[in-house]
Amino acid sequence: MPRLFGTDGVRGLANVELTPALALRLAAAAVAVLGEVSLSRGVRPSVVVGRDPRVSGEMLEAAVAAGLASAGADVRLLGVLPTPAVAFLTDDLRADFGVVISASHNAMPDNGIKIFGPGGRKLDDATEDAIEASMQEPPAPRVGAAIGRIAADTDSVGRYVDHLVKAVPHRLTGLSVVVDCANGAASTVAPVAYRRAGATVRVIAGEPDGLNINDGVGSTHAEGLQAAVVEHGADLGIAHDGDADRCLAVDAAGRIVDGDAILALLAISARGRGRLAKDTVVTTVMSNVGFHKAMGEAGIAVRTTAVGDRYVLEEMIAGGFNLGGEQSGHIVVADHATTGDGLLTALLLMSHVRSSGSTLAEIASVVTPFPQVLLNVKVTDKESVASSSAVRAAVAEAESELGDAGRVLLRPSGTEPVVRVMVEAPTAADAERIAGRVAAVVGRG
Image (tube, rainbow, N blue to C red; front, side, top):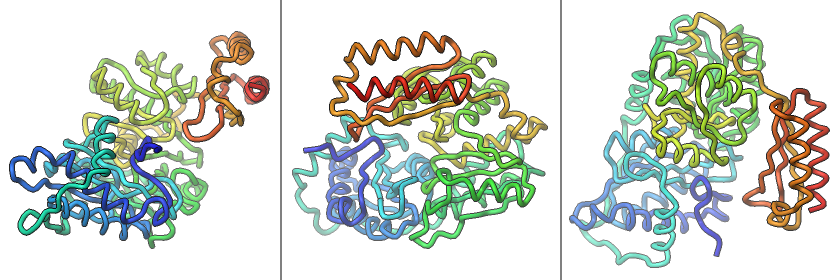
């Protein structure tokens, strides 16, 4: 039987793969595992629940709340709120755990359930496995006063915005920004937080109706934001995804500033303020060579992990580092958050722009991305590709040709019969030529 939890919670097509019945069972099992200590003391565990505005979230929220209460937990419904806000409030309200109902940047028909443990931290594999096992053995039903209570929270946005604004080193007075809220969870929070921090804010894609989340907008569809920044003469633009755990930026000329550049700027800013732990930043193997060169020139060490924010966070915790992230704009600032927070990232980026006295384009120029080509090659056996002497020879030849001026990365897909061939080189033509040559060998197995 395939594992229920994926790399970022439980996801699927809402009401087909991710059904209310499954959500109820998952929630009840989470109480049995994460609420075990409270239950053993005769205390009802406390759980906070938030969601993004997609239409299926209402249905799944009801199922999750019912499952939690039926297992003996008291539930505080936070309503529509960014994923990092739920993580923050799990810690701030001292809840036993938190639940987010969201499929992040996925299209509207999908949905997901993510669970944060005590302190607002992501669950490890062993805890997820324990919850899955508990789903197979439903606990004895609670009755009478042992049944949990469900109540709506009325102060979640205010508490989260206060937390965000306190983290900003410099006021944003005089800075004009266009924010694309992806018709998602950022819609009721990001404009408030950015204005509270002093920025002049214009909002696009900030009118969620349950159906339009991520629909041609947000961090995966930044074209509208790029046009709006130029049209309105704004200093910069910020793009969030559906649950606002990511942030990409756009400079005044409408050019994208990706997660690599944002992470580099935050690292340089933190180091300048003496706030970068061990003068080190953590990122994944997908970060561009240009990022690594910029960090080297700034005297900042780089730790590299496998793809996925959970691996970035694991390395940060293990090494005592406080800043890490991905090219996608999922960035963890551990001094203020336990998970990727797109709003916090945006505020810190804008604060750095404001304090520097320069434009976003000027400060982002510290990172010169190398042209990157990514090819998905269908294969019959991913394992045989990895052990193929012909493939190893092709990669070695490519790496020898590139030297320090690029790199080659082969990465098997975790869900498809595909090997991803990524090449970075000084020119786009070189990257395309070398990637095509390696991909041809990979395709032959």
